[in-house]
Image (cartoon, rainbow over all chains, first blue to last red; front, side, top):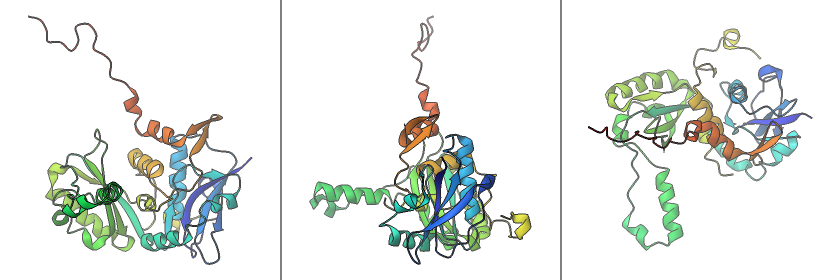
Length: 226
Length: 80
């Protein structure tokens, strides 16, 4: 029995390719009249979960991410026997998805990794926080963790700023990196961003910064609450 | 579907996968992306796996190698 494999949510104006990698049939299920659509591929069976499956999913999402398409990539693994059943799982999030699509339209993600940079900084607790209850303090701290930044980053990253629509950082995997960041870069200024990123790397050679290849905005789709 | 050579799109305007590193692939696909309810369980060889468990195994397989306890004579200063 075939399965429908979720690939992405796209804006209403997106034009789909006829087929995905390996000729998989693609179809879009609108979440409502004039609303975004969930795009999925029909597969003859559930794929084996291996590196090839990851590469296939990535290639399928990249093929959808043509210029002019606003796209939120789906996390690997969502599937259902029926396309409409898959789309149904997004009910109630239509407006949030529309807002998110507006944010990522005509922009790409670039992942930057710092091999040996100083740790990310957490904004200090405010005195006013102490008077709040434990729940409020937890939420405030979590909000600050989302605003983690490398020390001195604002000055260092000034050449990148004109090309950025959004930015976020995470603590890294200790054996691989100090931290990693995600930039949402305007597609039209990607070349200028590349040139600016080289200057940032040169400015802090000890941080061992590396900027990856552009990808669909996975990190910025993850911000949408489930 | 046409490729970049066929549609004439300038480099950088289309997203081609060949330079995607395994690190970015795993980070993006298993740890990021839009959550669609229902992806929690995946099948592998007819056995359901908990998704979080699967991603943990793929992301950090090296951690599965537990440190070997020092054998006799290992981890000690050599006697003089």
